[in-house]
Length: 148
Image (tube, rainbow, N blue to C red):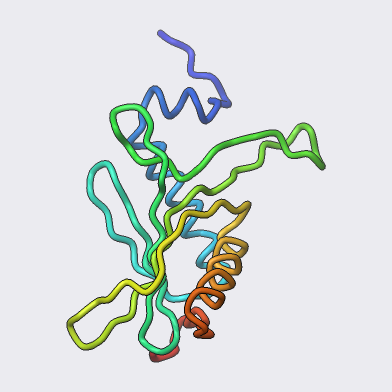
């Protein structure tokens, strides 16, 4: 019987089971979004995923991983040593962000860019800053239970 190691490096997991790796990374992203108590929706296909965050003024922020790994499966980011704690590995999110205005049944893209951040909170903050500079509109993620 083959022995299963207690810790599997992320790069090895991505090689062994890229579909599972994508699900785990997506769970990490949505866990962070849950902590922020924001409204979001996950859109999945077999190899790709996107997360749509509800914003004020009927806008959404769509976040999609930009990296592709084994088998063409999406990867949310990279792993690197944490500069502050050497024994800890830090996950850096690499994403394509779209700011989309929802008008009745029509969706119009207002801004589109790629970004990297060390957390979902920082990704949202950076994205909103870029979006504000680009469009001049001040948007905020909707908290759970709030109406658009």
